Image (cartoon, rainbow, N blue to C red):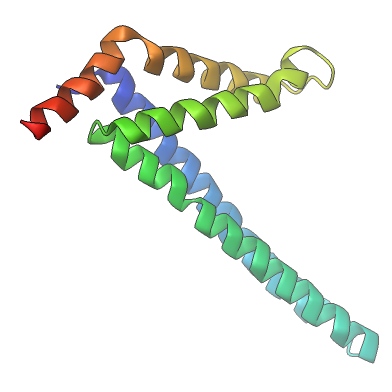
Length: 143
């Protein structure tokens, strides 16, 4: 049986993926809109192509990056150990990125809250009971 905390972590990953999908679609849309608003002068045409191209590239990168939390969420729901390990690594990195905010250097409440959430995820996924749920699943499938 899957622990509740693993399910909640998977839901969090799906929510993160949704944010990246929305960001990607928004950047693609805004990039296209900005290119339409550029003047019709030769310099404007060049800037229009650059803006549109950069907007599409950044938007597509966001859309591609959204695949990672989706894969992690599915892997966590299926109790795949690779998903647990990768979630630990990425959450630890996210916590390290938020340390400046947590230490008050550049205090941003939402970044601090997200950092603490990532720390809680790392600690939870490293607990013996949680680790056992993932390893019990992999050994039962091997048998």
